[in-house]
Amino acid sequence: MTRAHATTTDPVAQQATDDLDLAVRLLAGTPTHEGRDPALLRRWAEAADAFGAALEPGPCGARIVERDDGLEELLLARYTSRPATVEIYVDTVDRAERLIDELGWRHWYPVGSVRAAALAHESAHEHFHHRATRTALKEAIGHTALRLGRLRVLAHVAGAEEIAAHAYARTVCGLGRSPLLLTAALAAAVGAPGREN
Image 1 (cartoon, one colour):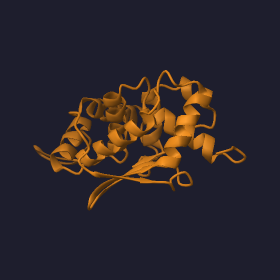
Image 2 (cartoon, rainbow, N blue to C red):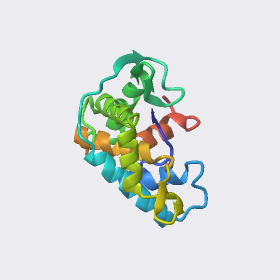
Image 3 (cartoon, rainbow, N blue to C red):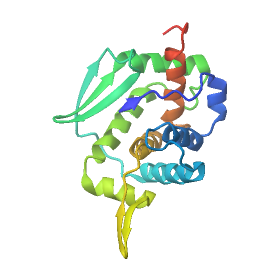
């Protein structure tokens, strides 16, 4: 799901934060990761980002439906698997496009790239509905849930698929920065009290 995540309310501070730091913040803010070593979260974020950037590009096989009710919940897009559908929230996409112009970030996010990145992001989530892709991501991250002698069971890392999906969207859309930066700025702009939508 492409949902805007707030990390700070200052777009200038967000701009100065690199994409990997934003990914680490996403993990740190994910339930189950409270108190985890920041260096471990950084390794997981790097692995998830590299995995998503290396995913084979392909068209989204899901049906695409446009909706106009995502701004209140800060939803750009959402993937549902039964039936395979991507919902694009055009009100939020339009607000994100205006925000890019307001912040002077058009060199990172060309006109029309918000919708394209949201579709690519949800296409990555479609990939993660396949067991082989989920397993490959777990192997890339390498987080062990259980070890019995030579037997090793890999664990799911909450938030890793989201980071991989953002990296996939950044790569296939040729963006100058991760969509994570834009979604954080959008959350700050729309979610902050007294800010105009």
